[in-house]
Length: 187
Figure 1 (cartoon, rainbow, N blue to C red):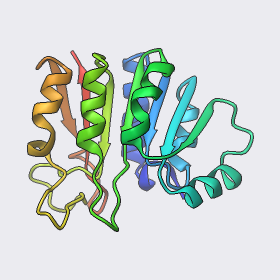
Figure 2 (cartoon, rainbow, N blue to C red; figure 1 turned 180 degrees about the vertical axis):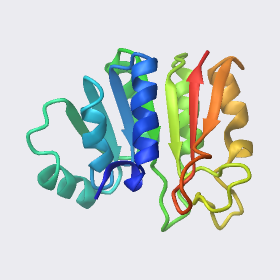
Figure 3 (cartoon, rainbow, N blue to C red; figure 1 turned 90 degrees about the vertical axis):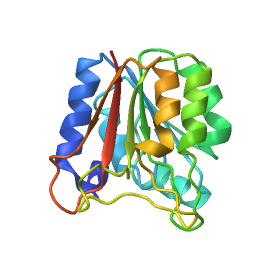
């Protein structure tokens, strides 16, 4: 498995953002198999990743992340853990938000963004599985409740985080079949 859901475009853009924004700490929600976690560990000094699925987290730690000194894997719900992680992380932060469950319509994105806002920080944020306007060939999450992971779902929270001064871009030049992504950076 390759990092960033096998997207070379996403890998390259994340690396560019980390360099442009002088990021030293990455916080990832939704570790899954750890490929993106490993890639982030090569780009920044410290990676903190949160995985809710206990079995998945243990397997990933044992199979992929052995011997990585700059990665901390936390097992639990990002909504419950993110505040403490932010307080302890320090540095110039990058968030890779990818903790959404397909099985039970579980979507922690809004709570994660509220937590970022409550800490009065203006980090770089990347949200995976996001609906890219005008690109129906890029995958995104939608839920049985009718909610789609799109700009309408998060816009007010993002504007609160950045005091309405931010850059927003999408991976609209990604190849067909990739997942949609939104990139948010402070101005």
